[in-house]
Length: 156
Image (cartoon, rainbow, N blue to C red; front, top):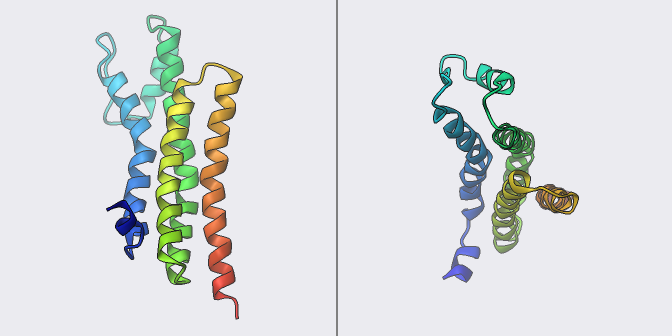
C-alpha cells in the first residue's frame, strides 16, 4: 500500500497542506496553553499582544514561559521554511521529476518538520539542540535537493 502511494502522481501536492499543518501545530499548542490560563485574559482581538503580556506575568512558572517561547520559535521557523518547500514541490512537478522521488522527498520534508517541532519544544541540552538543528538542515536540504534536480531537469 505504501509503495503504491509513493508511486502515485500528485501525492507531493498533498504534502503542502500537511506541511502547513506542521507549521501551525506549535502555534495552536501555544494558543491553547495561553487560553487555558485562569488568571489572565486571552486577547483574541490582538492576539500578538498575548506573548508580551505573559512574559511580564510574575505568576507564571518560568518553564511555562520557556515552553511558550519555544513553541513560538518553532512556529516562526516553520513560516520561514514553508515557502521554500512549496517552491520545491511546484518546481519538481513542473520539471516532471520522478514521481516516487518527489513523493519521498515531500513526505520526508513533513516528517523532518515534525521532528524539528518536537526537538525544538522538548530540547533541554545542547545535544538535543543539535538534533533540532539536524532536523532543520534535513528539511531544507530536501528542498534544495528537489530544486536542484528540477533545475537540472529543465536545463536544455
